[in-house]
Length: 112
Image (tube, rainbow, N blue to C red; front, side, top):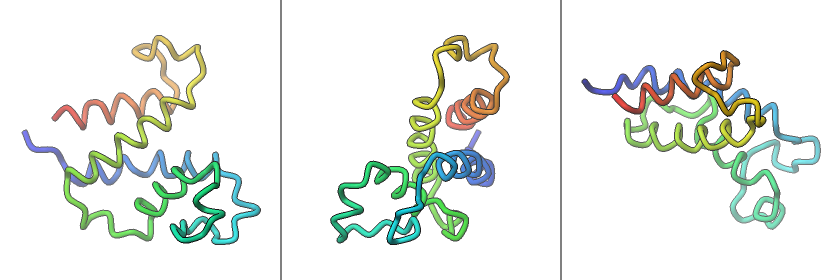
């Protein structure tokens, strides 16, 4: 059964919100637009999050990305969400928090 591209695009909404919430952009000279030629961006501790947002923001035409590209971006988001979980999420099969529910949805979508 082929992966539903619309579902993959929909699944990007949750990490987009979480990543933006986690970022401190008060002092960002580029308003979260990653600039690979700026030393500040290259050394910023939020570089990976910023790059991900710039590739998957609501303003990016993600529907033009291939299924493989969408899956890759979701895997990066899974790593981010997974790393933000506290130790009480060790039994994720039973956890019903937003993060764990999203992780299960992504796991199911990527296995199709």
